[in-house]
Image 1: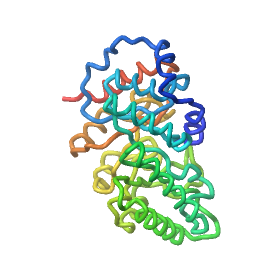
Image 2: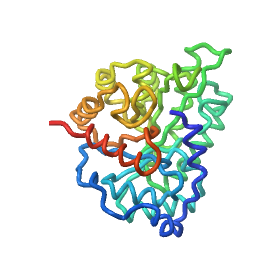
Image 3: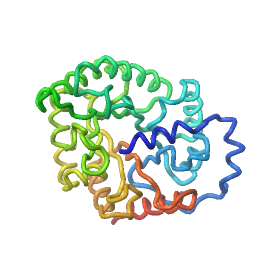
Image 4: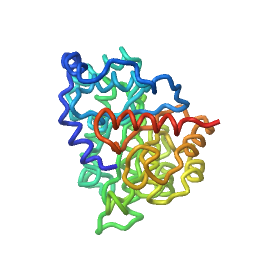
Length: 304
């Protein structure tokens, strides 16, 4: 994921419940046709598709279109008081929240591959718990960071395991699950350490905590390794969260090469009850682009 773009753009949102009424006039109040579709899986649009609207209004639009969850990487850029306002709107709309990013600099120093940065990482985990207590989300993303030249692959893996074990202790008395995300190095994140689902699985098995699992980002794993349905099945018990994006371009399903209808069908057949974060861009801007995006999800979610 290009979190640097998503988080910086999300941080620009000024989200207050009082602003919702004014912003609502910019979008039609008519019930969207897509709301008639009863989705088989729990898709979660990301905050930031409509950057000119405050967060509560974005939530209203997602709910109007039949979605009952969302995700927001940049939540920690807001105060806890603002998070409480978002929670109030979530309760009103009966919505759940997916991930936000724990260590937003996980491609830099505050990562896991070098123990010198573990204390900073753990501070981020403690901060994430404070937001979790307010927003009551079920999952938060952790990233390994970039590989470093002065340590072997084996030592870096051991350091990631140690850091996640310590993080698991921090969240052990909460309902929060930390999800480690492999990222592709071919297009988006050159030098990133944890790339494949097999490597992530090795780490998760060693951590051995119900509070630390895999975030399987379908976009990244299509680029890194392909064989999506097989790898999802292979690591099923280790996966706690999915994210979506088509290849190439990282836009909504239907814009690239991934057969999302078959992928979603396979995930549904496994009995998945969690969220699938819509962490991608739009092939067209604005509300028209969002409507197109939601229409593509309706198509991909429709199978016999």
